[in-house]
Length: 101
Image (tube, rainbow, N blue to C red):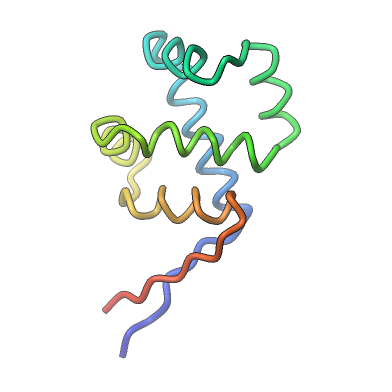
């Protein structure tokens, strides 16, 4: 029987915060993120501190938009890339359910 694999909003937030921390640890990646979003460091700090779900979803959008970055981040936090995608969907206001064998 298949089981449904879900991620709750708190776990999704935590994963997004880890993603932001991962980006912050690499100046080139952080610079690219800032350039693409037009955000400044103070805006990022405020949004992350407030646990703004739309901002956190945007962080995961950025990670998910680059297969190499997605794979590297998922390996870094020891989760499957699909878990990152689940978190992205949840923070974006979508339900995510995936049956697993």
